[in-house]
Length: 154
Image 1 (cartoon, rainbow, N blue to C red):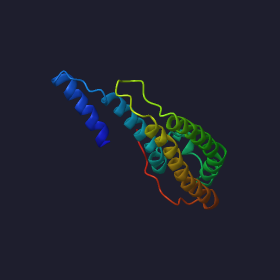
Image 2: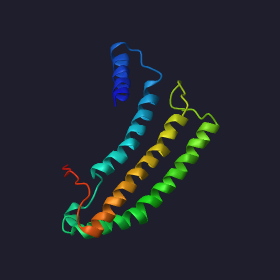
Image 3: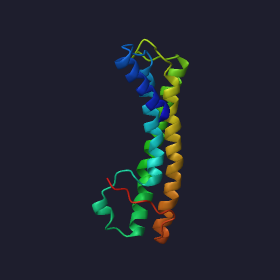
Image 4: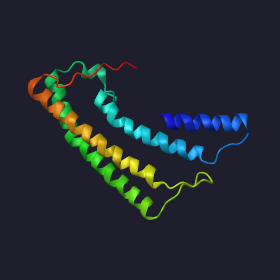
């Protein structure tokens, strides 16, 4: 977050106080933000902060919650992430092989570092998903949580 905030602050100061906008800030900020957003997905899964219909979920027993999560991870989560991982690897490979550059600004940075962050993030999300699947399976079998999650209020 520090480099992202630094780039935005630098751009604002350069543009509005010195009337000299940068050529690189826009590209850098959307690349950093996209990477940080993707990296946050695994952390959010670990914290149990992804969206759920809590008004229904709270009425289920622990074993039922475990079975629902176990089936959902196996049937939906992993197949979807595997597909997204493969597609993002193809995008990265294409960008790397062709030295693809951004067309957003005159700086024209290489896009492959940002495009590499996407499959890396999907891989990390899959690793966290394995942990969550084990916890869900344990909950389904025993009715006891392996890892208590904090209640996230919005």
